[in-house]
Image (cartoon, rainbow, N blue to C red; front, side, top):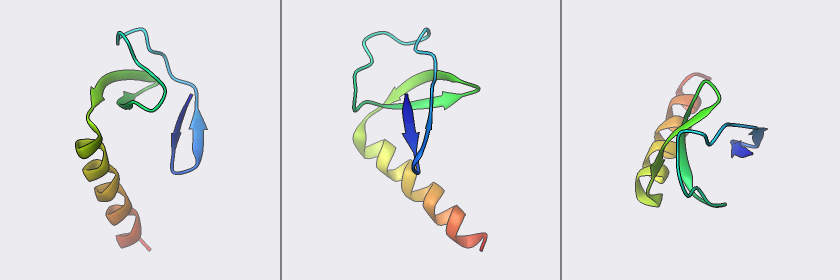
Amino acid sequence: MIDIGGVQKEVSLELLDDVAVGDYVVVHVGYALSRLNEEEAQKTLALFAELDGSQE
């Protein structure tokens, strides 16, 4: 299960090894594709939040 902005979805981990609770992953069409370190994940989440705020 992943949580993005309070929305929870089930995704497949078939393409990644050793994913643990708390890891950040890039998800596309229901699959976790790659792992991100926390710094990169926070930058990406901040960009998404900025884009979401500019569309109001």
